[in-house]
Image (tube, rainbow, N blue to C red):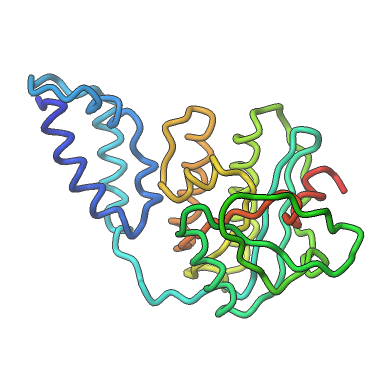
Length: 242
């Protein structure tokens, strides 16, 4: 027996300990629904809520993280489109530069712009609100590593989240990529918010965010997602089958 108010207090402590490894928060969904009405009356806790708490306790050893984890030496970009499917591109880059780009993801209303080299893939820049940070790479420096047709029709946000999960699975096929801080360029704001938060209450994103979380936890990856406008996203063309 437990009241929603009591469980809310416990949840606050669990959330505090999850800040260094936010993907563990993806274990919670029914827990938040149970604690939403802050009432003090004790009641039988639903089985689904107990199950989610059990999953979180099983993940508890993962709350301890290494703050000295190195940065990847690659920059990854992902995208998805309803017209074709998924695209993942990557470019080699010095870890110190990747670190600088990763810090942009922690700041509101900030994004990155790729360099222009006059290539056929360069599109005119659209006016964007916020602060732009230049990346010393052009689209031509990226190579396509995944170009996969979607097997089902879905909301664009669902496809975008699936693209990030696909990019993570590709990255972690190489063991030397494990245990590092990783930066992904993404052009979907809803997906960026869910990754930063570590969970999503939106039904269309919840499963894919959980898939990202399990991959990040398994590979000891600290994911930093950074917003890149669509015209600068090197994964935009492969996501359309080009």
